[in-house]
Length: 265
Ligand code: MLT
Image (cartoon, rainbow, N blue to C red):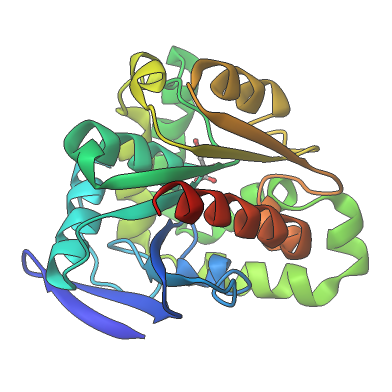
């Protein structure tokens, strides 16, 4: 891990490989560790930050999706990367959309993993605020208990204990500040529906066939709205499709990157 100071926030990030820059933005309540099986995909320079309050990065009590996007853009400025492919997992996808609104000229492609372009419903927002109150009184463990069963398929939870345990450790590394700040950021996020038809760069939309948090219908809708999208449905995967089925996911990313490199030649 390396560390950068972005506007006074210590941001830890993984970096490996060489080639086209590929920025991995994690979801909630995770860290860059959720991409550890992607860091070996060849032909690209991987950059995977821990967002503020997650993994080993400094905590911040209040964040918005836009301020997470500013941290990622600031990191790329700091390490002198003018343009990249941006991959966002769930909340990371919301951040990719915010980066697209701020700095589309820096995007050579996007990988949208188990995410959605629509904002929270009123009921969804209420649920986030109830969760914030519960985390304030009982700590972030509660989120781990509630979310872990949605992240992986029941078969993986039962039959691949090493995968479940690794995920649990990643989720438990989230700080109270990080969890509260990101719940509030997600509740207030913008509607990215109008952005999609304007995102005229190659897009890979990946979804676990059994994702119940951001289901296949969300991925299909995004793939239809994007001008140049490929839809990848990953069998035997729930919400963390890259983590649960890395071989299938990585193969598709490799092909996607080859296409981007080829068209930029
Ligand atoms: C995530 O995986 O990042 C979150 O579940 C996304 C969300 O709650 O909207």
